Length: 507
Image (cartoon, rainbow, N blue to C red):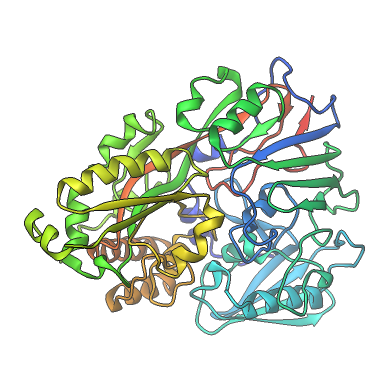
């Protein structure tokens, strides 16, 4: 039996609205390409692989979206930890949990054992760049017997079962892990679909894995193509070249047939990230000036076509408890005047970056450029595909970034997002933020097991982060997914971690 506290799980669940949206797509007139029921699905994804689908990069979400790899746990429709490769678990004490494994087989034929689980988690912890989900925890795994694993953390981690549902902690066969630190999910996962071919950053072929413990998938396979341009993805769906196209740009959404357009409330927030580590925004008064210059409401209709809400903070309306617990932001630096901005930045250009994988972001960057220039900044944009700029972003090569982030992606718990993005040693700290009060606030939230108090601490941490002006929230997005009318069983997931599973198929 699981002993995860009921109160904690209940309050971590998202609102009923999200439950209704995490459902199969509706049927209708056939426009698909897979050749009938049981055929192959054709899927267009937006962000090409950064590291050959390594689970330790942003590629991890691809492995979960396509049901290639699994963790010990999964998130159910309400954001609660549910069994996956672990059939049950119990908390031994404040820092130790025991997990009982189900009978399962890797796609290369090896059995899933406690040792293989330990091996996978040890590699994740030892990775040169740690998965974001491990930013605020040190995890030790031990095999008790062939089917039992005990996981221990240095400090209490009340949401460990949620953390283990992260796509970055998927359990792969021992053959996946190279001596040089590389990790390959090709033929080494446990999910109902096996990657049999990966062609650079353009295509992947997945075949049904008939040894899947959860039963035989209804589709015989999935053919994936990466199309970074959103308009091109929408066109591919309209032309019948693909059955599923994710992240349809808002400008294209109204051009799709109504029965192929599926709007999903999202935990995605778009923000202007300011580099507080180096460059002009090490000056807090300039960060404050940028924050005051931004009018995010101008983006909602002009850029997002109404498929967004003005941001109230880091967490939007899809995080049901955030608004009630939001804390007033105090202690911000005084914004530099336009004259002061011109004087402090004389001869310096604000390097504003964004990426093309989400069509709205370059448009938003152009609007923000105009707003920033009105208060005295000289702005130059750098717009590229995300995979071409991630290393530079993490290295602090830009002054500002127009960024789209799924705030509950890594664990379903907001603390992991805050820790990875805003703590001094966070592995995804693009803002370069180093602030003792922020670190302490996030640490306080991480250690709180009472659900209501944890949520309150999260919102106190949000206020501390916003105080620094290292991030200026812009809008809370609504995601539009394109699905051909002869496809059933597509998962419309507010967290954008799931898309295709055993029940997804052509009629």
